[in-house]
Image (cartoon, rainbow, N blue to C red):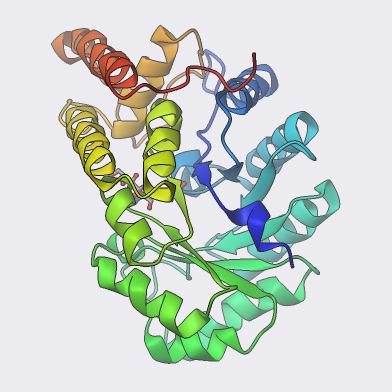
Length: 309
Ligand SMILES: CC(=O)N[C@H](C=O)[C@@H](O)[C@H](O)[C@H](O)CO
Ligand SMILES: CC(=O)C(=O)O
């Protein structure tokens, strides 16, 4: 197991739609190329940011396919295959393996409040479907289930479990998962607002829903952390947080705000799917200001604008 390929900055990939709201091959590949050129280490495809819960299986498979066609062998690709029914997750997992993804990941079952035995079975059924390594996704804010140490330890007995993406807010959860998982076990920081603190307390890497809006800043934060430059790291985290708060302060979903920012960067991946709401009216005019905040922060912190050239 080469842990290094799971180290670094992994933007959560967005759903890319055409003007009619259908998954777009061309726009999916545009976003792939854009992020590749920024120098990120990998992508987390089809998660919350991929609007997975609002897409059908065919759409999710199409996205997995377009991303693999563009970036397989170039970046580390993690397929999120969580779905309400185990059979759909298994079908997505098998397809991701066929496409050559590097790892699978999944949220726990949603909607029904199932016992831990069912959650264990759900994740294990996904793992049994392929030879790929597996990354547990703990995101209690959206799933209502917070991974217990008990179930975590049980899952660690399966050698396919190589990591956890932890999005719960206490950074101590990251510390505990790392302590229990061990040196080789990969812990991904979930909350982008706590990237620096997550890394300091034990996270190896980060997967985040806002990274693709400002990959330069996250890559730079990582440079500061790995160089032990903690004052600089804290300062860039503050600017990242101001940007996230601004992205979340508009009248539509954060993903809509981010997609509008991306449009200003020349990347049109359409809008968001209902029930997510679009940013509209006067709030749409505020996007220019957010893009300006990102550009200013990129300059201020001496970020590389492109990894290629
Ligand atoms: C609750 C949630 O969606 N968490 C995401 C994944 O961990 C984050 O990446 C957020 O999108 C990000 O921290 C902005 O709040
Ligand atoms: C991290 C995130 O936003 C996702 O699950 O896609």
